[in-house]
Length: 289
Image 1 (cartoon, rainbow, N blue to C red):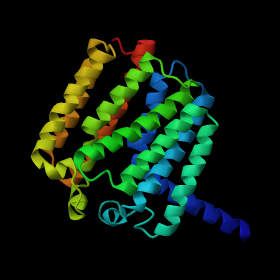
Image 2 (cartoon, rainbow, N blue to C red):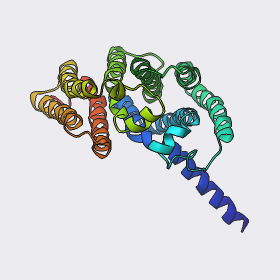
Image 3 (cartoon, rainbow, N blue to C red):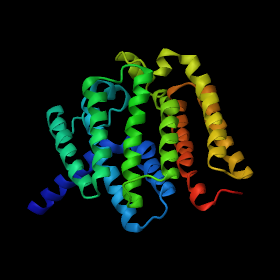
Image 4 (cartoon, rainbow, N blue to C red):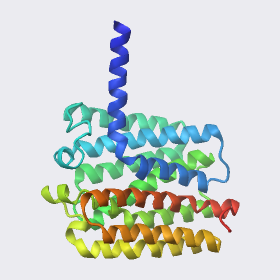
């Protein structure tokens, strides 16, 4: 009986942690790990596992922090999350948030000073975004998202490559990724526009409903061309990647209801995932066809 209760409790908390992170496997977890694999000169199974563990715990920390302040919006947009569904209280979530911050810093210390700096920078970005409120407008929101991605990717890249300094390829990949996120990540805001509008958020789809769709229609193909040239893709690889960007951009422009915006966001994440694999061509020339 005792063992059964312990197992039930463990299953409950495992499911709770999964629900905290559920939305961001496609947006952060897999793109960050794939980016680290693509950028690193070499990859071992132990490094891949260490990177995945580090990214997941930091993703959990980020989600717990953010969702502490988004319960009202999540009731509308994502009612299955732990707080709006009543699986955990706000007080317990805030305690978990600070405990995870300490745990993540200790976990990062295992991998070296550079990874600790990335972890600390991510925690600072969380405080600025969630506690200080530097997420009130489209530009600030995208800027904070960019900072978050860069700290995730820098830490993951250092663990994957077992290096605390970046070579030229890694540095270019990180800077390009940051610009890519800053200029396109508002793609995630289209499906949540109704809930964001209800609670007074000023995301780009709300501030410029038509302009934001025209922008994403143009931005994804342009980025596809620029990234293909930057990483030296072959003609067929470049055409395939350009077609992906053009297709995703057209989906956002043509279909404008919530259901289609959710589908378009999934497609955007497929394109974003592909974009993060392109630096592998600088290391191994596998996309020269």
